Image (cartoon, rainbow over all chains, first blue to last red):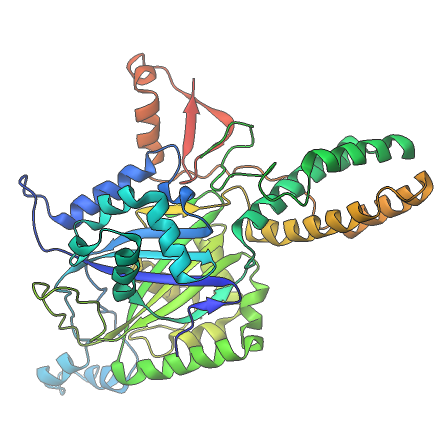
Length: 235
Length: 236
């Protein structure tokens, strides 16, 4: 009952177990992974901006699961309120069990356009060296040395989505970026041409359409990860 | 830590669920995916880019090497990943006020889930079960989900308009141009970076302007300079 796909969009969830080892400086591998990802935040733009068709993605380290301890409203909880009549063993049964993970996990969750194999291949080809920086601390990654082995490895780490909701759209990223560029430019055009005569607006519109070239997805457009409105490329 | 990338916030929530009720949750999710009309409430929350739920069974944690210890957890775990616009409170509150029934249906079997109404216990539950993102990337940090949807409308309208550009008189052109603007009046609007600071902002400031700090000069914020990770980019 997996639901990784919605239209042309794909929801990928990866849980890669990090080795229970330490560096020479006695820093846990999981903390090295965390530090490495923190370093990505300090770069001019994310390495993921180079990975084709990534809408949004995130990385974090799962140190442990979250245990529940708040009082509930189940039948056993209610019985435990009748203290001191309720014995201790029954009171303990009313509490949720405490789980502990045996490994820490690198979690990578990405939403992208297209199919999984194409995406992972594009990811490896675009930022293979950066992937190794992070994943080399994980179990099983030592066998990864090509796009094919990377795809196979990621599929072993993949969790199936139970439900995937697309609230935006599932167009290819270059279409989305071109559309955003057109929206921004046309809003400016509409403001700049308010009150002008028909002949002038018509001439300006022809020049505008020639400049923005709506059918050309490659240029002019916004680059992936663009965070400035100035012409300077962000990525 | 960086839960914010431009206009988008990354929420990760992990919560335990008993194995014998996990399949019920999966069944509800399956129904929702097969009958999208059941997600009508979610669609009204137009602040969401993408969201997905994953349930990992107690024996389904990936084990890739004989040296890796086996997991011994007693519960299955539900993971929720969401990308939305606005603040944490706005998002969580909008669930409570807009689709409390649907939300309770998805989380109903999770251990100690307090229900989405009243608000305060629900806030506490989400905060307690939320995990912080370390690195968050957004391909369109300047755009909200509604911007992306409206941009598609603008793009389609311009493509359609372009096809009939050369074969009209000035009067016909103005008629079509005004119709174009009227049709797009809800879709046009400038996009600007949102002034949201993440935890990394302080470090970016120090890295880029260590010299300024030494001179004890306070850096100022340039217009339109939010990084993809939602941090300010300071300039002198």
